[in-house]
Image (cartoon, rainbow, N blue to C red; front, side):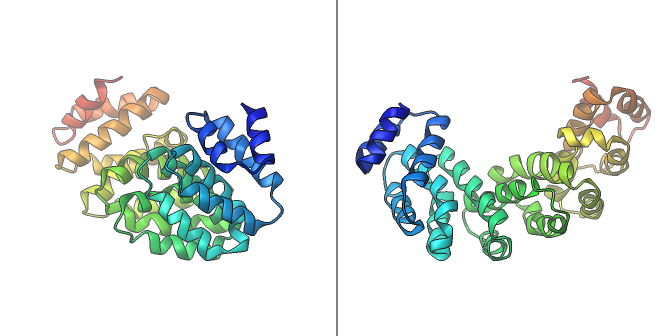
Length: 281
């Protein structure tokens, strides 16, 4: 397929490119992006290619458009971000993933300007767009730039209470647990302590579930400080999140978590949490 991609790009046959990419796997899509960037003389033309591909009905073409936008961005930031906003709310979930990834690349490339835009997107009526903010934050965290830690935490903070399932599945376990807690453990833990004082059950769910990711095991003793407190919450939504975090931590650090759960079994306020967690240990 790569030879065909090379040929149609050389011939500037973009309708044909869209057709052959439909059904292609991710490596071929990335290759098409790479070759388009390599063969294009200017960023303005690259943006024009992205606009055409984004208008296609084939999801694969819109994937490629997402991949082109970070490279085209310097030519026209406003138009690039407008198109990216559209792709972030695409009907196809895989295109939305690509758009979120592009948001992350742009945040890393032009931090101040894109951060301002993402703060606006955070208030968007579409949960898909709000989710793109989370993906961008997770991608930016991978740089481990310490000066970005607190701004990224503040960027996601207003979304902690968002009950949309699209965000809920990603925010606590993935964005906080797998990304921010991994790359900025000290600062993120400070924020988790602060967030744990909220009375909003969705905020508390996210706090608990952040420790279900692999990074939580590295901070298991500190995590227990917060989880002990949240385990006393009588709302099922909250204490079941605590139980989920406990059994996942328990699989990685049984020598620390099992004795804790044994104590909870003797505490009538925590016994349900302990029983739920022990089902999976």
